[in-house]
Image 1 (tube, rainbow, N blue to C red):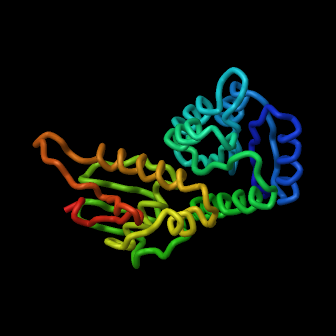
Image 2: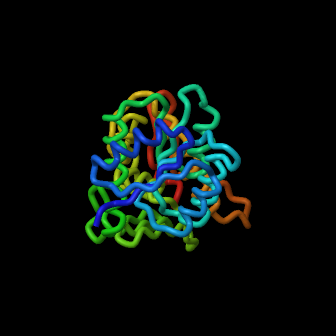
Image 3: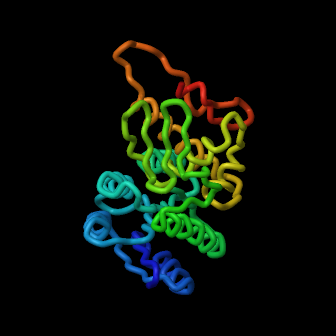
Length: 245
């Protein structure tokens, strides 16, 4: 059965260009040109991927992203932004988009990005990961447990709701504790591509993941826990086991 994709784009020329090239990949394509219809379609149907323009009439792409992510935690979302709209781009990633592409974009890069996202979707559906798995599929560091087979994360006896990308990012870093990874390396290992200029993708996912990890830590005794994912200034990020002792 072919993967299905929902294209949300109000520019008919761009929408038709994307549609033709997605069909060339063998995908079943549905198109809508406004946010209200996009939310309805996304919540009533199952799509392998939603390609979402942020600059929509009426209900914005940011609103669509928020609504979809609230209802479907593991829905793959690729957002499309104008090259100059950095603020919207960061907001979209913070709201839960898995990745973004800046317009204008090359068709070849778009197809490659879609292929990488769909590969991750397939791995998730098959309860697999694109990175090496722990011997029993479970990664444990102190009071953090990551089950790579069931996509369950428990921190200090509290279950965390992570998107599929957040889960893959945490799993990869937890399998390599103490090792520092640059943003480019994380794009390659977690997102499956190497393109300069997309570091916001990594930064925003790290920030969102940190917030969820902090929320999973008890505060009744006012103890301050160190960050589980730490910034190594000028280099990148690392997973710190000391944060979950």
